[in-house]
Length: 452
Ligand SMILES: [Zn+2]
Image (cartoon, rainbow, N blue to C red):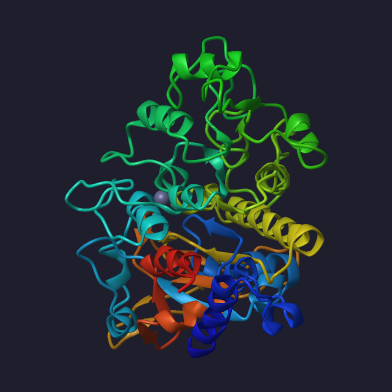
């Protein structure tokens, strides 16, 4: 801090006297480079919805037979994160003393998205409002104030709680068409991608009659005829997988709404045995992968010379976990992991870790996933690790819930400002180690962007 103040003084002095100070000539200490030093140009938050420690680990075991094995598991900042909603708490000692402790007091994705996007805890089902129903500034809005681009992309319907919580303000996450209208019209974002298409079913087959559950007929018509967003800030609509793929390279429009041609999610709800091993049931080929969407979205948002904010969600990790579908959980985690690889490739090719901050985490754990033979025993709980059966084989694991839990979730960060998260540690969990809180994400990024 002291050094930064001295540098700031040098720059201000140079600016006021109008002379060319030696510091300016010998090092790149211009005001813009100072901002660059203190604050990330681009911020990428990646959320495996419902992805607890064992969800991440199950994909590692399936792919590598060991854990960790993903590039991000080597990120310099590796912590745990608490996720409870307003009025809740996390008690590390009780977690390991009573097996069922984490089954109570869990957040939903709306309160969690609000916490991560705004730094404010709120009630479940609430998006972007504090507990007095006042709207609170989110990271997309802050990015736009700073002249950056912003976007949200997901594998589930685009106006589900996680993406919506990074864009709009509404007291009821179920107000889907109203939320969709706000996302399209409130000018907080330049890129929205997800499922929720009115003309396709969960297998990507055309419907006889449209289903306007996720988007109103009026807003859909406006997106189709090009009037959505107004003449000053129009949306370009993309729908087919080929269009998503084509958007990854070359010159992209400044504003893109990508509505995937499927009803609710890319793959997890497709027909066939939902409890089959991973990849046994053929994938729907007409929808993009999350990595393809990621490549497209980054190519849109990087049009902005001031940088961007994006939230990338593996939304159906949660859905597979609610249904206790182990095979589809791994498919969804793999899809999420490949999108992380796409982000890392984009940084190495088009940006750098010196200007981009990447966070990989979850909004909560779903399914109370453990290793075999876990549960409350007379003396103390048995909380066993999942067991690898080698690459290409489902690990041995056990589900204990069909709902969310209050368990800690993983948190990885790398890039400009990442080390700042180690300053926000709230406690030390006996198994998971030091943990931050979900509100620390937005609050830390706001601080970094403010250059403090
Ligand atoms: Zn859920």
